[in-house]
Length: 404
Image (cartoon, rainbow, N blue to C red; front, side, top):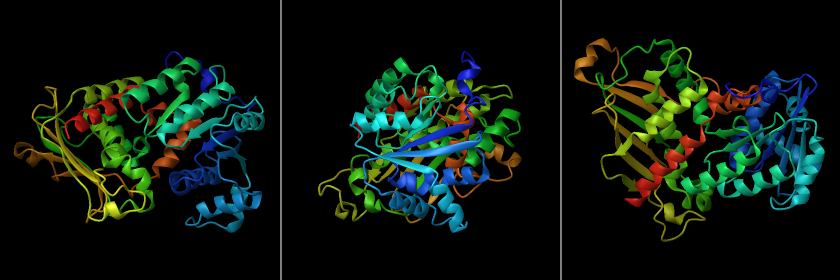
């Protein structure tokens, strides 16, 4: 990586024990994705360091036994022995504290013992990111002088202004390589394999306006919002999956034709950002709300929050001139579909074996959170998004919302 000293990006041999700190331990994401992914890496010893100790920071009160039981239950679907589950669970320490209480962060600082470079993962609503980051920085848990990393779960901010405020705050105290903005779709195996084909120049068809008629990006789920009504009603489908997952897919696919074998992370980020700058809405978006949504606990009775969207766009680019880009996402759909579909023009179909060419994003290859967490420990910046990508994503969302 250019411009960053190697000593800052690697854990030294003297730091054989490394800490992983998780904020948001009781959230659905932590329980369903992050903790099982950490267990898989722990079991396979794939952290890139001899030993990892886990620290959770949260508001809920747990006894030691209750917390061990909590971690064990998060591994319920994994087919391993109870002994292995308990061994993993006992490698955790829990610090109970309000997010606003400086004493909790002082206790965290004491636990980390200064000499280690932790990875701090903030898996909380974006409205809380600035507060937590401010306290972490004040306690010098992550500083420019150490190899610590700060992971922030998507979304990065809750609009373009808040994302910019957060970035300005962090960059005053941290190096850019210490800030890992998480969108686990960057760790999706199917997308990574297609990216590798692009780097090697072996995509089995021409990916350009000469051959492609349209590309669709789908995130359709059969499940409803369930117990997340209060959260979802403030967010909606557009902010929940379009701003991050689908726009990352779009930015990646449209950047791939310009990849080569020597492309580095900063060049990839630049190409994705360029694609987002060329994004242009061509039709009035469609928004819907599934029947019964307003009866969900936590949802306002007069809610106008969308649970479904369909957006059509084009690119202000000669390379992609005339290609339609269609984005569709929603809850409580009849059929689940998380895919990218590339449709070809009649003139190109003779040389293409299948139309459309489908990239299935789920149920394939390594779990994306396993990939993202491993890459955080060994520091592969390709699996994380840039601030500019996040900001541009918010600008697109704000443009769409202003024209609802």
